[in-house]
Length: 119
Length: 108
Image 1 (spheres, chains in turn red, cyan):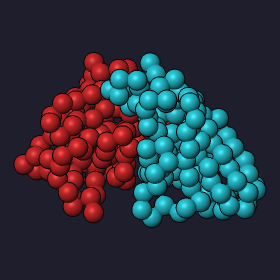
Image 2 (tube, rainbow over the protein chains, first blue to last red):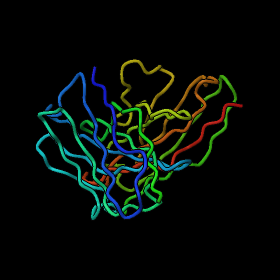
Image 3 (cartoon, each protein chain N blue to C red):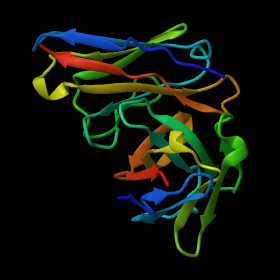
Image 4 (tube, chains in turn brown, purple):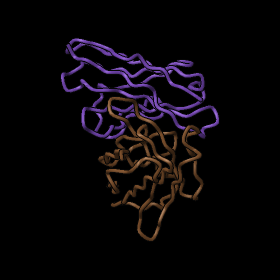
């Protein structure tokens, strides 16, 4: 049974880069047909798809965040990562790492990690 | 950018049927998934491919699709079903994934 766990700083200063890592257990980031994804949710607001990296290494990002986002995979560590540059208070949210499957569904979610952008 | 539209709230009495809709221009060609999120918890996948139910999801949760609107139906609503529900799909190209605004289900 695949499990995901987010890790990274809970506090990031404005204009800096937010960096989070997701460790995959019970499965492999090299599994075919999986989209390793990041989702975020500001307090009291909707879920927002940030982007994903496919098994082949190709990436897709939310157009509204594309200029600031990088998602990568480290197969040796069975992890995938998120980097979001030039953060502002608007990037304060709970960040989830998620496994996406074909037909746009996300079946395994991490517990989420809260990231606050503040000086 | 592509958007999915959900009603902000739906209220229903215990034992009744709740229906939550999700509308989007690309839905005739793209599948929809539904998620349940309770306060302080990560979302849980309820429905995928418009109407498929993952193992472990109660049969009272079902999905249907008609044109540009998909519907999540919860039959025999229970108090524990009170939560936020999100639809999710992709734009017409399948490149950009998107969530609806969420619907808060209140069990009266």
